Length: 115
Length: 111
Image (cartoon, rainbow over all chains, first blue to last red; front, side):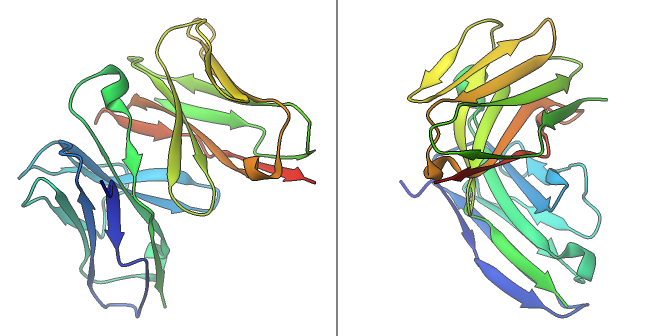
């Protein structure tokens, strides 16, 4: 099993450009999450999904959109990139249920630089 | 407001030292507290704690939860340079039932 994978690993954008980050998981997890990590700010939730076809806003959703058309994939879109979106983006997934099944597993991250 | 506060924010020790990392939290409905280790890339899971007073151990790492006082500690004994990382504490909370992370403790172990 590959676990959680993310593409691309690194990207440079100009202000105003758009792009899509792809997250894929092969663990048949119901829940998927997108976080951003900035120095001194920890990990903050952007959007999340509790199942195929569903999405919801997290703590910092502005400027991002998401889609979950297939259970294994969770896409994060930036329609018009801004320098404030320079960050490292992590995707995570977890199983449905409680206890040990609540453990979130993270992808390797995407480093995004917006000039 | 649900939140997680970790201390210290950074720590420098020498190989062989024992360290204790602290995590205090506020949560409306507690479910579990998790510890992650983050080196260069993704956070990797260490422990999940749900019951007070029960220590979880994995090699030189151990963690315990105090639900009455709302804190957890992560102990690392006989530290090695490979333990150098940011250690993240998180709990499930918030209106979305998602993980709320602390800002992390950056541990540097010098040879």
